[in-house]
Image (cartoon, rainbow, N blue to C red; front, side):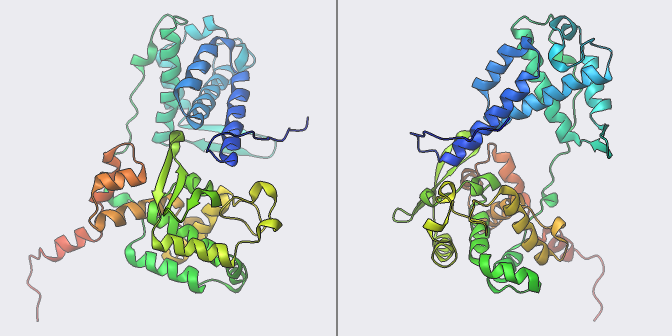
Length: 374
């Protein structure tokens, strides 16, 4: 059956492509819900009204994975598929069953298909997210008196490693300067890479400057439109996590690189497909750059600065870390940086404040036990 094309009748300030992406995620949520038992109906309504769409989808996918586990890996149900699991069977589960799922099964499991056997291994953060998804579901079912006990009190704790400032991967100031110079001159690029670079250098430089100035998330940059910018007022609009709309001030550097790209590299409007005409950053195919293409571009350039392979280059999220750390090193308040970066908790921002380059080197350099011989 052919998928129908989305058409938007949009009377809000939210860009059409953002509305379409949200609707696609809603459709995915509905598809997952259709494969789960009917007794979760009220829980679906709770998720719909209480959490962001992406969070709702993540919870549902975790829960569906758990229901698949019950069917395929345990004797806890006679059902042949997740949607057939009965409320009576589900109400007999206890905390031990969940702990076995998280601690023994999820940590490493095997997925087989006709051509391969994949070993899936989850780290602690993935396990913690799955635990959170299941906890929300079980608490909701107990509150609605669908199951007899609140078994979540018996869930084993999942210890997450405490983030260490020294572990934050970021570019230092000199590396940022080298990065922007390389994108401007094409140095270190192969002859094949230079053929593409000549067509995209202004675009790529604008993307990097925006990441490094504002610490934008990848999706926030991906969603930028021409209409997002009001240069006469010196600001542009972005859409944050949880659907927040934010106005950001634009400085000279960002206005300069965007104007260069718009005037010298971006194709004429009439040559661009209608649905992509407002997109700020376009591919060579004159379509909005994909999230994957933006990520790969950033990793390619940063890998050259770091002297490593493209796969080991830094992601846009590490440019976000670079922006946060650089701002704090310039003397800006962690609370101002928290606001700019949209950190929910100032403790996240404090990690960047603690990351001072070469502080250990300076400490031991000035703490010698043996005098240097002349």
